[in-house]
Length: 189
View 1 (tube, rainbow, N blue to C red):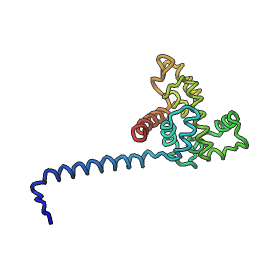
View 2: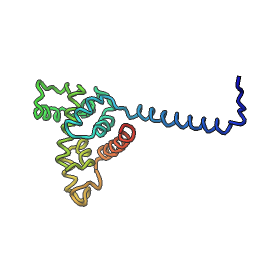
View 3: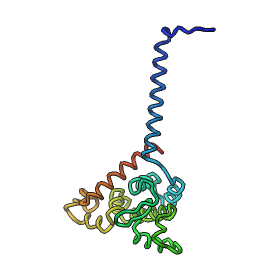
View 4: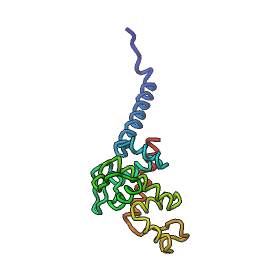
């Protein structure tokens, strides 16, 4: 039997325990962060993000902000599903995308909801020249409002960017999505 003099190796044991603790803390915190920032419906998100040339982590950040990944979510304004699509937007998109037998209840189906949400984001990207804050403001507050704000010197000094978003909900929404988007990129990319 070999006996080890622990006093002699005390320093190495302390270093080993510190290294193990740091490793557990880093891996444990990543696990906790992934619980707070999940990536449910990953296959659908990646499929439609690719179809519409969007970053899938942006789509995930929007879904997290809109519905916390709850497919049956419904807002007070009747927006539905994961990406909180308004029935009127769903109707418009379903015509453009040739969805057969469209009904607003179909917005609770993750596949259709994510497809329409990505299609709509792609439309907003074209309308607002790929300016992410404007796209997000339009996704939440409506593209008509964003165009009005861009033409109002109280909200835009150059007519191209928003210096101030007058709707508190939309301002908070843009901040939340951008924050979530950064975090999704950090933990999943």
